[in-house]
Amino acid sequence: MNLALTRATGAMASCIENCIGCAAVCTETSIHCLERGGAHADSHHVRLLLDCAEICRTSADFMLRGSDLHSETCAVCADVCDRCADECERMARDDQAMQRCAEACRRCAESCRQMAGGTRVSRAA
Image (cartoon, rainbow, N blue to C red):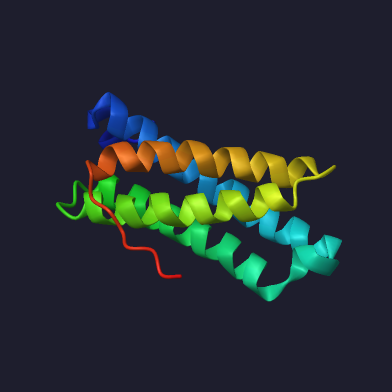
């Protein structure tokens, strides 16, 4: 285990693990969607998966480095993860990869909300 991760608080260590896991699942799911084709390969959907993977990696990095800005990145991460989970759940019918992604995104969103400590992101319509 990474030394920085062992020094992190319990909640932060859990959030870091959730972010890293979610990033991996979203990246894997983006490939699944491209291979599956159809609505799964819609550019908006794939872009959202990749956005989610990237903000999860960024949030984990900010926490691992002890950045004072981690609460802000975590607030954005929670918002993006919620959006990604909603989109994946919409496509999850008979698709375990989409359901797995939605679940990972929900876990990450909840952890990041705790780390954000009430920091909110205004959601554009």
